[in-house]
Length: 486
Image 1 (cartoon, one colour):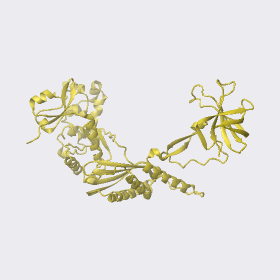
Image 2 (image 1 turned 180 degrees about the horizontal axis):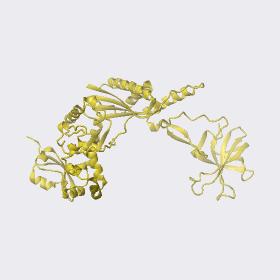
Image 3 (image 1 turned 90 degrees about the vertical axis):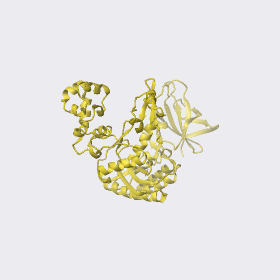
Image 4 (image 1 turned 120 degrees about the vertical axis):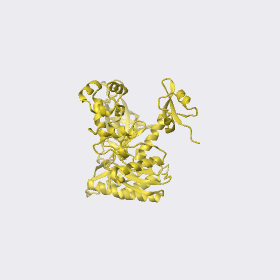
């Protein structure tokens, strides 16, 4: 016994209306927009499900991910369509006709019905596909045949509003062919330039590239399998071969990759992606293989091959120029490479945002002189070593610790100070170094600081400051200990 017709309903215009119908319901006269009461009057045994637009959108994204196996240029077209740019890809599948048949067969194996049309422009292909293919033989529009193919389609297939369609229909223009036979100037004056732009694109007179949902990679290497693979050893071996291929491509381009993405296409249509980023441009095959091996080992959710992967792809998402580096006599280049490799391995194991390094800032404010940023985000070498005579201590207190200080003169260095209940007698002092807050960041009432480098009688050195100026800034100046010198 055949299942009852299925419809999806949503509330619109104060009534439950059909949002989508299956083929059985469509054959029996049901269409989106019809009220559920009218639909039940026609088909009493109707199966009804609430429409879930979010679930539909998520499912369409999954189908789009699976369509990446055919071309990296995939764009969403409304809530139920996809546009694939197969320029330069069709020959890999035996031509446009064979590629179209394989795509439809692949979708059918997963229970999806679709109409696919290959045309010279996205707008022509979209209009024909949404009309069931029109009169195009085998779904392939011959080069230059877009105008003839779309001529019999209704004007609504141009994607214009209902008001424009109604106005053109009243003027006796019902098909795209009728519209193309009329001069463009009067049409633009009455209905706007957008109508002519859509018409030219549908007729193949103007081509506009699609905006893919994922950025186009710099380089791609892939392996397809007649029999899907499922063993981890086979997956790692395949990744190793793809890494070697990409290394050769990058070397020929004089570039190195900063972000790599491995995509695993399962036979059931699911796609799993693993991304690896490097601190510096790299095309070292051995290092990249090790990074991906560690990436797979540290996955909390292991790669589930299901019935196996029939396609594995490795792409360079971001590439930068990379020229052979000359090794310096002091060995700094080797040291920098080792640090970059360490950053990459830690980022793979712990996460990119958890491996940090200090970044120097162009500011006199000690509180903002350095910042912690993801180490992989900095392509340059580590920060240079500080000079022997440190203008700033290595150890800073955040926030600065209050102290009690006694100075001989109001603006002079302290003679002694108390910190953590211990009194320190000052033997030597250097300063002041006056640091005013940055005027574009200065909060209201922030005092000026006078910094002193002092040494007590035991030889310990401190970095002190007085917050506020006597008789020139409001409030009573206070003393703080900001750092310790080694």
